[in-house]
Length: 209
Image (tube, rainbow, N blue to C red; front, top):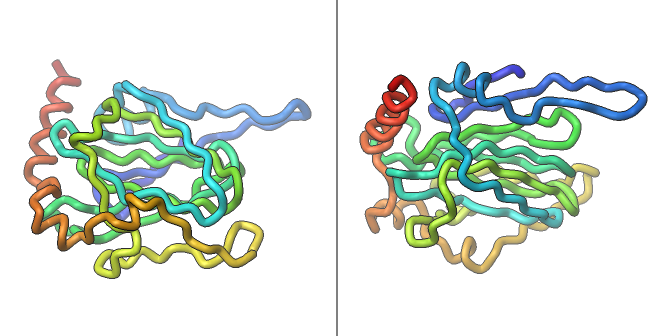
């Protein structure tokens, strides 16, 4: 597996080696030792989620209170999505910035994002199926969202599906009504870069112990 850190610190993309023969394709979708070597800590999976989305569906931007936060290892096992990481850590040098990776059933890349980062994606074809390995279980009382169309963040959502047809963005009522980044900051629900750093340092110490 090849690993590359994104422009948002704490987020990486990995591209697996695929072995193809007349029977089909085999690959290692997730390998703990390689993730640990690449990012400096392990991912202890406590929950696995799967979502299927029609073309144009946008999910996110979602993040969790940190600590404990929620690290995610995200891949698309069918179809294609534009996967987006947003820096919502107040005090981070890249606060409010975003980076994106195409996850699909061809290159079969995956994105790992650490605790304290926001996550979203847009489905590029009907039936796109995304699998998330999560470090903590879903806990609605500590989950938050930011409007994915917030102009301050300025995510460049795709205008066309994977087949080139026009794409109509579709949001849930909850995501459409979510706060902007500025509103979330004023509400005090965003993690700080310092609190995230302390939490990640504690996870690394636990690994060493």
